[in-house]
Length: 395
Ligand code: PLP
Image (tube, rainbow, N blue to C red; front, side, top):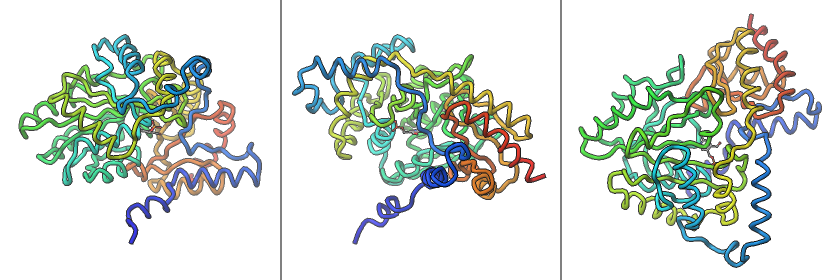
């Protein structure tokens, strides 16, 4: 008898993947000009030149036995030190390499955190709208995901509902800012309030409630938008980071968990993260890209196209009558659908206009749709006519 949960996960394709596959078929039928695939979050700008230069240099210069060998489980010591130095320069912190545990992207970083900190029955609080894989990762660790409905006015946090949801089983609160799918960035005010509630509730229940910051989009923030650095606000913060989006390297699978010294029982928590990585069979993160990302840790891909696309879509959709909260970062925008039934809306978008957009329901936020605008600007420009026709089709 197989593990039914795993069979289910392996056979049910995600809505996003379904749309992506549909798009590929449709392109073969009608040509690429007439299909607007806004389904998937694959960066559309190349990695900075320094990435390839560094990779070539390392391949040519490093002893291949070391380069292609296992690193220590937490990652190569020099790479971790370089990453710590970069974080310290940018966020005024004083971490060392020993605060970092390198992982196979942010996904593995999250899994290490959920497995490392939680026991069966523990609850992890997540705010809608949320990245759907969270549920898979949290349940995989034997914990329960507790969802807080979205604040659809600004995509910040509905604090009343949040406070009521915390109880003695709450092990952690997961935040994702800049956010997939809304593009929202939590303000410093939101973070301060969140931190003060967590301090108070940790004291009330007599154990730390961890704040897990999922930050693959940290560097994709637009002009004038500050992304508060959470360890500077709350000691018991675990940061899950990756270079998938900031350096456009999703296939290279490199990220980390940051465990600050200020965290209660820092050494035990770090050991639990490492133990989780071991039990999940990660062994170590990819060796070449540990070094490449360390050398490129101060770099970001040229994200200007995302900002151009954000501006075009925010204005364009608003002019057509869509209600939109302007994204502060990422390459996603999350407008309200013209009718409350987001699934029917996205189906019409797909079948009548070849607009491949994802229903908000899967992100825990019905009545909305996610548009991934990590695409060439000319595609966004050409799509506007069809978003307009879609809106008009309901009038
Ligand atoms: N968290 C969020 C919010 C994401 O959108 C993604 C990927 O799209 C991940 C985590 C996983 O990223 P990675 O490629 O670093 O594993």
